[in-house]
Structures are given as structure tokens and as C-alpha cells.
Length: 58
Image (cartoon, rainbow, N blue to C red; front, side):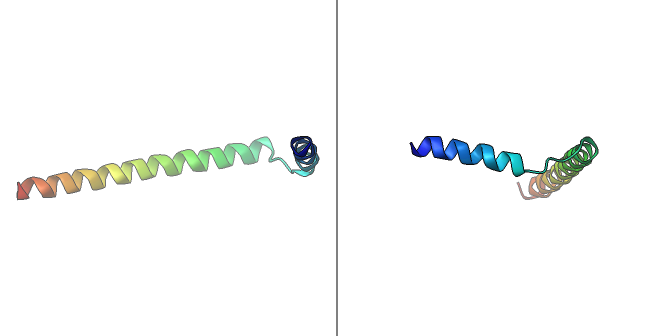
């Protein structure tokens, strides 16, 4: 019975949700992909620098 009430409440809430339009979705997706690429490059460079620095210690 609690599961049924939960499902009814989920359906009711989903009708209230304001979904983003296509333009906003593309903008947000581009931002996430761009940020991910920039962070991957940054972390890759940091990794290379640390490896280079540690090679002098070994």
C-alpha cells in the first residue's frame, strides 16, 4: 500500500516539474562536456608533471 502511494505521489510531482527546452539542454550538455575535457587535460598535465618530478628522485 505504501508503494502505491509513493508511485501516485511520484506521478503527481512529475506533472509539476518544469523540464528544460532543447536549447537549454544543449547548453548544459556542452558545458558539462567542455568542463570534463578541460579537467581531463588539467589532471593529465598535473600527472605528467608529478611523474617528471618523481623521475628525478628515483
